[in-house]
Image 1 (cartoon, rainbow, N blue to C red):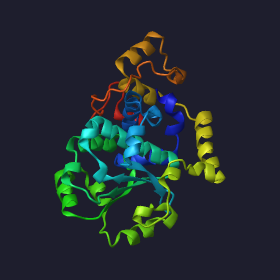
Image 2 (image 1 turned 90 degrees about the vertical axis):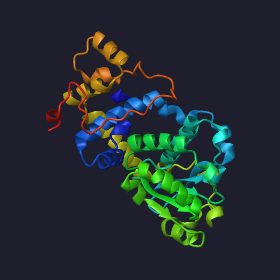
Image 3 (image 1 turned 60 degrees about the vertical axis):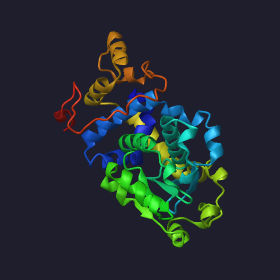
Image 4 (image 1 turned 45 degrees about the vertical axis):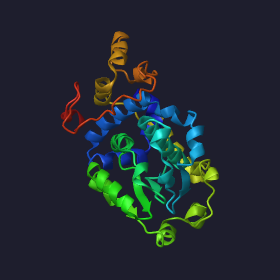
Length: 307
């Protein structure tokens, strides 16, 4: 249901992340976006922040922090709090994705987000490999080019052991965004990128995380809000899916939705895609994350359709 996400898909900063994360190939990015929209509905991403996360929030393992000097949202992961016995790996990964969405809600116009991995008192028992693999699969396929920097501190033998276990699953681009800091260098490194009131007290600043999660930069800056809304207005009035886009949407649409659409007299009219998809299913934690390889060419669409 592409039309359901028309506003989101028309923001330049959102599209740019997909294009950069797809090797600057627009046709590859377009195919990945359509698979992503299908995944959003199946995973229940649009309502993930409305779920009851009170038990998770109470542990203070992950939460939204401040914004950097460029307005990029940031979230903190107190890694030593993680206990695999508290929840399944799937639910632990889902909470991490919820935290990502909470961070993006602070400033959706930012180009990327930051992560502060607080590894104080971390032991190897805090590392959950299955959760790591689930998160890696989701983040690499559904959140391309989202990460600005991942600050990990303080450096210890545990971090080196965890990196040795997980680094060969990560891309070179992701690894290049890791910033390892010692305890003595932490305040100066964070100070380069964050104002003091955007750094938590435990890291040398004065930020209140409880207030940070409620912050909305679009409400604070009228010009930013105006530019954001103008993009949506222009798309609503002037942009319509091409025949190739609608054909590609049919190709990745769940079978039951495609059959319903065709049975209803599909005539290649964009208005049919404004209906809410009947195929959107309840969350299935056991489902695999959909991956569309570069070599894959969905039926009904060939590369020349995009030239």
